[in-house]
Length: 100
Image: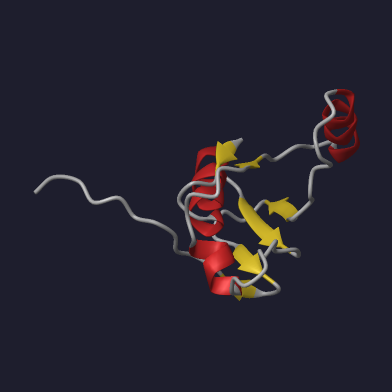
């Protein structure tokens, strides 16, 4: 699980790196008035992305706590180099600058 404060593509990439997997997105939440690029790369969203093996159990846990229903976005895949949305490679997001 990771918060999406640096953009979905960047933070999902970090989660995939830590897990040694890739991902294939088939759904992309885009806020009204935003572009797909902004949805993938925009930051400060403060939502969580979580990878689970059992979506039904996660949905039950959310419901038991009166949380909104989790939104499935796609799948983890064995190839760590695969990071796609509808077959297109994605990357990007907020990059922090350190030092001077």
